[in-house]
Image 1 (cartoon, rainbow, N blue to C red):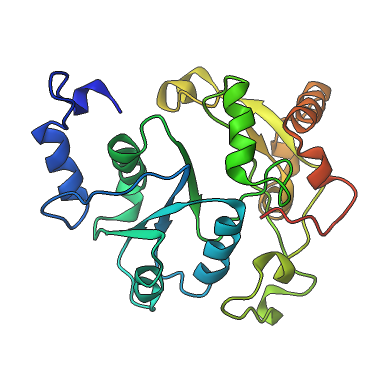
Image 2 (image 1 turned 30 degrees about the vertical axis):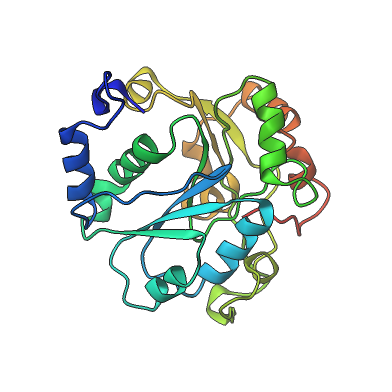
Length: 254
């Protein structure tokens, strides 16, 4: 919660903050949302195919609240979300490309100050050290004790054992089982440039590689070095990712 959005005397949001929130979403008055140990903030547009498995996966992990930005559904997604008591749907007709960061900031400032929140899309599933035996709230309690205020996660692209045109995914089925494979051994860590850090203050590093880079990018044009291999190995060891990425091509990371 940033100070410019709050009246320091009353603790209430300023008129400007309330106006910005209601203009970004289709509300005259911002709704009240009950807190949860872990809240997922989800950008969503026509995701009825994947929503059932996405919600089931993260509920099982311990996500207690889903704040879903409804960017103009017409495929039945709204009905799925409205039937779930753990979901709060925030409709918005604003353009995705211009507002995706604004939506997240407004929701986080208004509802999630001092709370753990997960920024995620419907085609993504969070896997963390200890999953599924350890719940996400349990894992984050250990993170709290260690004094961390945020966690960097890695996007791992998953794919099936057949051409995508032949994949027959059905509503409610497991995305992990449908696409259990991923690339190993071609990830690296890169530091952000000073210009990037001015726009994105955290995290100071990002991880590249995987199937997306193998398929869509020319490896010769990508900087690589022994120090990058060393950094990514240390990163995997510290954050427990090595157990997920090594030893099995059917690891449940998506």
